[in-house]
Image 1 (cartoon, rainbow, N blue to C red):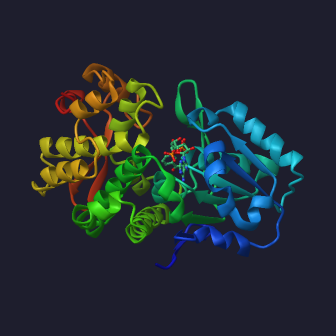
Image 2: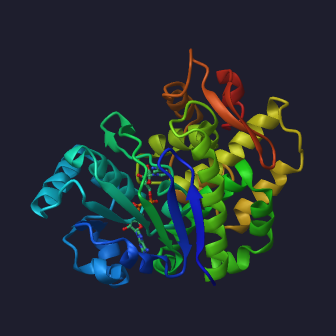
Length: 357
Ligand SMILES: NC(=O)c1ccc[n+]([C@@H]2O[C@H](COP(=O)([O-])OP(=O)(O)OC[C@H]3O[C@@H](n4cnc5c(N)ncnc54)[C@H](O)[C@@H]3O)[C@@H](O)[C@H]2O)c1
């Protein structure tokens, strides 16, 4: 198994290195003063994988979404200053999406901006959040409401770290993989259908291929629309539903990627109902794939597995308040066929309600 390299052609291009052992490249980054931000779980399981960077000043936060707060952001900034970092410095964000989002924002703010090297340790972060430069903390009113776009200097996605993920966190990442396949990689969709056995068994070659393919899908879109004025909205496939689901269940109850998987299934159903779906076989294929991967494919299963009420009226209310909506008509990203997705489709609430049963 070899490392995959992909250059993200943003205004300041950067390289994503993925595969087993990608973290060894930390040794090749030069001698700028550096520090590491991580969480205590990742620190306990994987700090040895940092190699020489294990000797950098390090801050390990308690794991969990609560770390994406202004209080923690201030703590990270104080830590960077205490570690003696200057403008040439670099922050290594070593963890899942929480550490990536918080570390990216801290790096963007510290001394008006230092480099961040994203070293994602969950499947979700490797296939999605570490690439693209979105950073954020949460406000009381909702997730990711305060942030900036700060592209990383490099992304090192070491797939050997995924061996220790819980089954649920692995499945959460797979929800985002399914999303990427639907958006822009029909071959990846077929690969998932064919090889779900080795994927669930975490075969390193298969995980490496998933990460590399998802990075390519996301990076190509991000390079064309870095600030999300248009096409980048495609990456929100399933997310209008997912955000409403996560909000209704209470944040932290349902892992993000699991909600995204159901959100994709609901988006395909909504697309069919609106007469936009050109490939009628896509809906049964997607439902079957989600089930094969151990992901819920409908709200009833999600309710049962997570003991969440997820009342249709509450979900609908959440979507009407979504920041991407307009005039009481939430906007959706909807698949037309495999690898072809449309965005900004304003939808009547009654049509949305019809798929929430
Ligand atoms: N910036 C973006 O574009 C973007 C995209 C999607 C999601 N996100 C954000 O990402 C966050 C979710 O990310 P996540 O799912 O990675 O969550 P996370 O960072 O909370 O990690 C999930 C759990 O897995 C543990 N963990 C991490 N690596 C591990 C490993 N190798 N082995 C064992 N356990 C490990 C963590 O300690 C944590 O308990 C959310 O805050 C979401 O808003 C951001």
